[in-house]
Image (cartoon, rainbow, N blue to C red; front, side):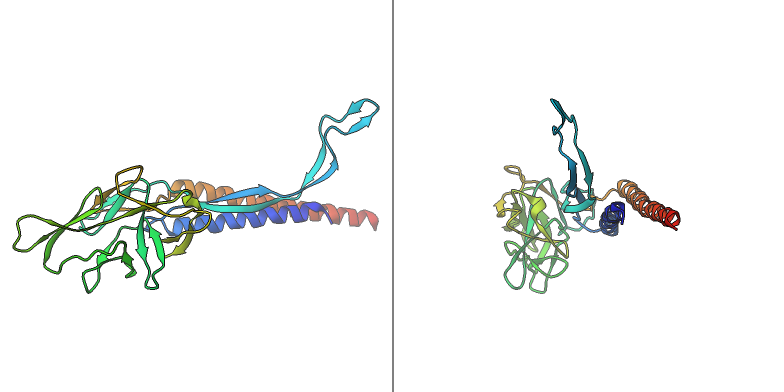
Length: 262
């Protein structure tokens, strides 16, 4: 059997994975805080027929080797954490991060998760939660008689209670950073989980020491660029077609060889 069959098959599988990743990027174009994924590929082992520098005659060495590759494999997918477009919503509980950082989210089990989605709401007790009902760290409660809420650049949440002339602070939103944000595990629901690859989360104040500032009444949209994704999609499609053509050509070669034998 021709080696081209198995080599081209790895190429088709790689391009299929590329299409799957692009499809997910495009599906989340309107997801708050979504970060596009990028697929990284690596070539496979090579069959060494002749090593470079090998002596091919007395006193003569080969200036180059002879090797045949075995195809390609998917090495990893990583999130691209560029800031997405900021959209003005006018909702006083919406907040966007202008720069680096994540919001801390606490699950009912007590586990910690992280998110770029700042579409916050209030639960029945007035506590600040995500759209899924998870608590926003460090656990901030908005008074029931608050007539307005303001989130400062540094994450300070101030409320104006009916009957008062000056707002009062009810807490501060913390931000978190990671040594390697690409190592975070995507958990769905706009949440990320810390892993050994991401490193330990480091909390800080918004707008200071490299942490992004917060922008009230805005939401960060997805950083997916439709034009770029469509270009990548066309490239992946053509790559798939070319690899399948290699298999057809290999099949034709074997068919002609079979006819010669007959």
